[in-house]
Image 1: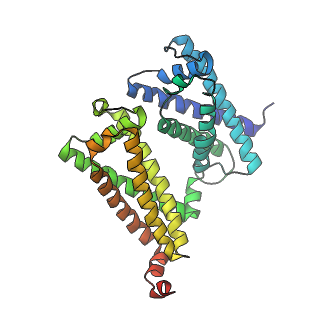
Image 2 (image 1 turned 90 degrees about the vertical axis):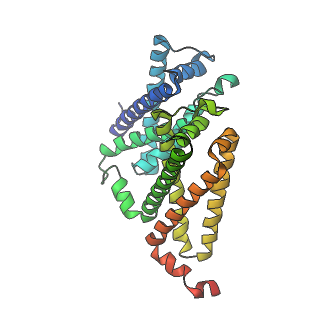
Image 3 (image 1 turned 180 degrees about the vertical axis):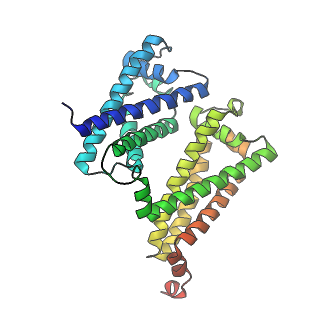
Amino acid sequence: MLTRRVRHGLVGGLLGGFVLAVLFYFYDLGQGTPLRTPAFLWGAIVSRAEVEPGAGIIAGFTVIHFAAWGGLGMLAAALVRWAGLPRNVLIGALYGLFVCSLAFYAGLIRAPSLLVLSAPGWPAVFFGNALAGVVMFTHMHWVSSEPGVVGVVNFLRTHEVTRHGIYAGLLGALVVAVWFLIIDTILREPFYTPAALATVLFRGAPTATGVEIAAAPILGYSLAHFAFFVLFGVIVSGLARQATRFPPLVLGILILFVVFEVFFIAMVAMLGGWILQELAWWSILVGNVFAALVMVAYLWRAHPELAKRLTSERIWAD
C-alpha cells in the first residue's frame, strides 16, 4: 500500500503531467500542427519513426505520459523525504527543470537522430517541465503541514536577496518589453520583436518570412523573457549582497552584464542570423542597457549598505 506522502506525490505528478499536456496542446496549435508533440513522442519512444497523430496513438501516448509523470511525482515525494527539501515553488521549478527534463531527453535515446532533430524546442521543454514541477510541488505543499502559502510568502519574507532579485528582474524585463514595443510601433508593427524572437527560439526559422504576430508565440516568448530576467536579477542581487563585504566585486557585476549581452546576441545570431538584420543589434543593446540601469537603481535602493560602502573613500583607499 502506498504511503500518504507517496500518494500525494503521485497526485502531484499527475497534476503536473496534465498541465504540461494542456501547455503543449496550445503550443502545437500555435505551431499550426495540432497534437504533433504527443505523436512525435510516441514515434520516438515506441515506433522509432515519425508517425501522424491518430486516436490510437494519442490514447497510447497519454497512458505513457501520465504513467511517467506519476512516477516522477512519487520520486519527488521520496526525494523530499530523504533530503528534507521544502515543498515550495522554487524547488519544484528546479525539479521540473533538471529531473523532468532529463527524463524527457532520456526517453529520446533510442530514437533515430533525424527524428530527434524534430523534437520540440528546448525553451518550450524546459519551461513546460519547470511549470509542471511547480504545480507538482505546490500540490504536495498544500496537502502537507508546512506553513505559508505554497512556501512562497515565507520564503520571500525571509530571503530578501531572492525577493529583491525577483523584483529587479521583473522591472528589467518590463523595461525591455516596453522599449521594443515602442521601437516596433515606430519602425515595424507592434509586437514584431517578441514574435520574431519566438520564431527563432521555438521554430528555428531560417528567414523572416516565418514570423507570425499571434498571441501564442508572443505569450510563449514573453514568459521565457520574464523568467530569464528574474533568474538574472536573482544572480545580480546575490552578487550585490556579497559586494557589501567586498566592494570591488561590483566590477564582477559589470563583467557579468557584458557577458550576458554578448551571450544573448551571439545565441540569437547562431539560431538565426536574419534576426539581427531585422531587429538591429543596437536596439537590443540599448534596450538591455536601459533595463540594467533600472535594475541597478532598484538594487542600489534595496541595498543601502552597499551604497554606503561604495561611496566610502576609505574602502577604495585600502
